[in-house]
Amino acid sequence: MAPVPSLSATVHQRLAEALAAALPEAGAADPLLRRSDRADFQANGMLALAKKLGGNPRDLAGQVVDRIPTADDADPDPVVRAIEVSGPGFLNITVADSAITSTLALRAADDRLGVPYAERPGTTVIDYSQPNVAKEMHVGHLRSTVIGDAIVQILEHRGETVVRRHHIGDWGTQFGMLIQYLIEHPHELDHASDAADATAEGEAAMSRLNRLYKASRALFDSDEEFKDRARRRVVDLQAGDEETLALWHKIVDESKIYFRGVYTKLDVEIRDEDVVGESAYNDDLHAVCRELESSGVAVRSEGALCVFFDDVKGPDGKPVPLIVQKSNGGFGYAATDLAAIRDRVGSLKADTLLYVVDARQALHFKMVFETARRAGWLPEGAARQLPFGTVLGKDGKPFKTREGETVRLVDLLDEAVDRAATVVAEKAPDLTAEEVSERAAQVGIGAVKYADLSTSLTRDYIFDLDRMVSLNGDTSVYLQYAYARIQSILRKAGTAVPKARPELPLSPAERALGLHLDEFADTLAAVAETYEPHKLAAYLYQLASAFTTFYDQCPVLKKDNSPELVENRLFFCDLTARTLRQGMALLGIRTPERL
Ligand code: ARG
Image (cartoon, rainbow, N blue to C red; front, side):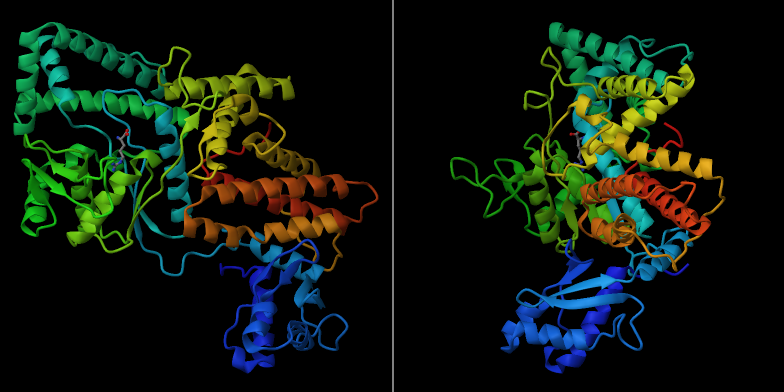
């Protein structure tokens, strides 16, 4: 199906044409149209234009008005019902009711709700949800996962080719100790496979890893000889010794079982082929260093291979370099990130690289991107970090447990689901325990994701479950209830697919809902352009609010409504539900049919 131009795009075009006809010397001037409370739309571009051309803005606006035939004219414009000059030279535009309903009918007839694909889709590689092997996922991994997943969905929906990369921390000296311990205690990770589901299996894997970590750490700290053997084991690992690598694999695999459990709970799809950890770039690290050194991008300084920047200095005023290779020959995070860029642009042919990583790593990425640019691996502006803020506890400090430890991601999710179960059971006391737990998962996980995604990325936010699962306010539960309520109306009505009735006049609440529904496509385009999921969340919240007002003011299944009116209102209900469901799905949030 063809994309459906929004009413705002149509009005914009009409104004631009009228403006060009009235003032050929204006060129392609932008009428600067936006939604308005006064009328449906307001254009204030005449002010700047009159200033530029030295005319009177009200006169100029009047000339535009004269060129648009409206309801009172012989051959009225089908979209613009009224247009008038107001204030210093604004244009207030009201669109025809029939235009609103007809446009929505076109959206409803399309599976994509009239949302176009990007004109020139490219390839984006997105680096997100990068947990570390043999470690628990904590609250810090929540945002990267949830934001990254939403951006993947939003870009793919636009037709962009998206390559997902989970740059997991699967390499480093800590493995020497773990592997050495496993060699000396070969049954440490053995277990009976009796877990009930992915989540339970994941938890069991993590407790085995924790046990291994604690036991090997204790030995490492108390036994000098073990410490030596562990250190030598790191060398074996780096040299690619087979037995060592096999055990390393075993630990990585065990962690992947754990990750899978967490992702299942979080209702996020992570595919094995997209998990390409730091170790995947091991073979490239020497070449990266060689190329950087021979091109002069990096220089040796006190034995380390460093890249310097004019504008990056420490508190003492001395330049702080990006260290690509340490003086002992070891590679750090920077080398791996550089090798990954080379691969993502060179082999995967990415046009855009996104990094959904904590804002505290902004300097690291700035230096890495600039280094890659100097080396000729990365076109200017092609890479972008989407830095995000911190999740805070109720005290406004970074979220910690009462004991001052980092909060495990699963604990946080479990608590959200528990709270949601209370809300669900209170609202619908007749549900079976099984129904409550299924819905509680959708409501609880949705609440966590929505609270995160409705905050602009760079802001910190307070993790407050009471607020997140509240039925009132800007929460996913509120949106889910709006959706479920519509489904219940549609079930009651029994109409298969309600049809639009463009011949019917619309009441103010219907107009407001209709105009907002029509903005879905433009909103998605803007969200994909700027990578700001919170704008989609805000759109959906406004949609649910507009629906609530509509529902209060425009009874749908009332006896004295004409059958046409019932059908048209059902049509508005249905399109609202479909838009909510699609929008929520792009944020990774479920919309249960009943709540
Ligand atoms: N594994 C790291 C952590 O848990 C984040 C990795 C970020 N991504 C990257 N390409 N460096 O903090």
